[in-house]
Length: 252
Length: 67
Image 1 (tube, helix red, strand yellow):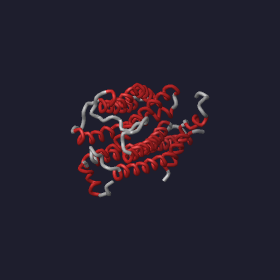
Image 2: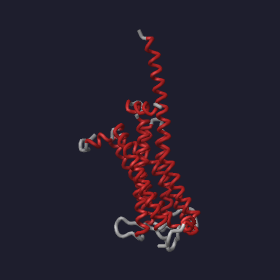
Image 3: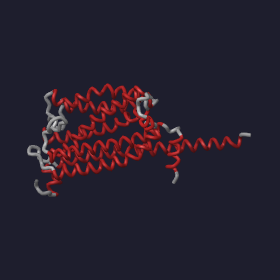
Image 4: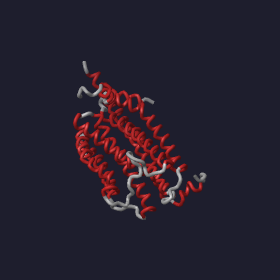
């Protein structure tokens, strides 16, 4: 590895070290996700007032939007990890990329289903082929393509390489999803929350939304670390450290 | 802000049929995502233990035959 990368990064990326590190951090990440999630749900479902136009149906936003953000965030992270795994052949980056795909697919699926459940009472239809909805569906297919390609090779490292290529090419879709509401005339509403400039939302609705965003980030860490740990064990199953773990957990 | 009422909370102002399934999907999908690697991990480790047991059995068979 290049010598400008700090030593601790190098050490942490070794499978047994990362396995232990992830094992320590995972329960904390899950605990914080549940804590922030509970606060956000209380704020969103109980404290926040009903919307003057949409009544209580708008409360779907508190899961729909954080999941949509996660579907894009995880895709970006998966593409970056894929790039690292292709260029520097770091095993851990490969595992992070491949194990991010099912989590991203789960968030994309939730986004589509909750959006559909929100669209029916507000737009009068479960589904419409407009730019935002279609590009988000393409995102789901990209995730499924990455997962499918990864598993379709006999040699898993070869599969991971092919799937990493697909993940990098598919990154084109991420800005399309994000800007679709500005580029095309769509049924979907524009962005409510902005990083630059004021958000178009009252603060008693905004804080539960942002809290849920924090919760989903922590959830992603917890889920990813569990998946990466599992993958590292099966990838390194011939190695001594994995045999020791198998031995310890096999004892009654 | 209106005071909290269970009735209003559960009916979601008439949108209960849309709001609660959305939250149910959120929790069910994420729970399945969170729990699935644990099952895979247990199966992998069981297979590895079986392989280790076979290997050590083979080694024990071989030892008495050697001079």
